[in-house]
Amino acid sequence: MTVLVTGGAGYIGSHMVLALLDAGEEVVVIDNLSTGFDWVLPPEVELVVGDMGDQALVEGVIRRRGVDAIAHFAAKIVVPESVADPLGYYLNNTVKSRALIEAAVRAGVAHFIFSSTAAVYGEPAVVPVPEDLPLSPVSPYGRSKLMTEWMLADAAYAHGLRYVVLRYFNVAGADPQGRAGQSTPNATHLIKVAAQTALGDRPRMEVFGTDYPTADGSCVRDYIQVSDLAAAHLSALAHLRKGGESLTLNCGYGRGYSVLEVIEVVKRVSGVDFEVRISPRRPGDPAQIVAKADRIRERLGWRPHYDDLEAIVAQALAWERSLKQRNLR
Image (cartoon, rainbow, N blue to C red; front, side, top):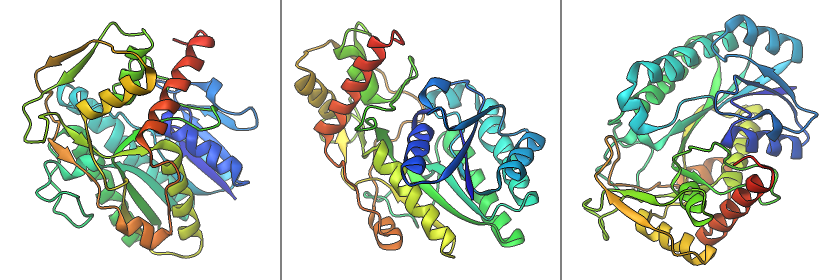
């Protein structure tokens, strides 16, 4: 049995590839390398450079490699960009996901794990956010992901496909062994941006809004370490292979940190007091979103191992230093 990882040369997908290999799984990756990097993949992993919306390509890979499960990470993920380019996001995240799901059904794939997002909740009326809260995304990014959740549910009902939807909160950190991390130079992840600023790769960083209804006025988010998130996917795969029902689960720690709090942690861990500028709010950013994360523990038996913000920041800083040493910055 082989697991197909779409977007497996990207940030989260590459950590899933490592987790699968560590677990003794066979892996094949489809990635168009628009934001991913072939060098992050171990040499024993087959990389098919192509589009996950190319049904002939996907079906050929599924049949040739005996794929029984798909972990679907490939997506555009920047909320403000989705506001400026909604049709691009609906094409990439929704239309191509539909093509991927159809290819999976036609080729007889039994299990599907989908990389969704807390953005489907929009401005939640309840914090921490439970999975059964009414969904009201405020950005095209969130809507594009929610549409794929709906398509999966409908395909499961019609065709017997079983799936786990994992709604990520804010993903951060890097592989503790230093094998992978967030490598995109212009990524918008807060901890990566702050780490780059601390190491001198950016002259300063911006905080987008300090007038939110939170304790210090900046946005509050739940930060989950990327290897813990990959482990959640492994637990989801084991659940499906044992005959488990389709599930939708939050992936977070259930505790929030504000943007300003995170920046202070990065300054403390790095020992650098870098420049921070306050800018207006960005469109599509909720004030506060923190996971109610009981269900994933109850249903999958998942337990985090890296729930420590200072350790997560230290991992991000170490990865940025390694990129500089590899002349990839």
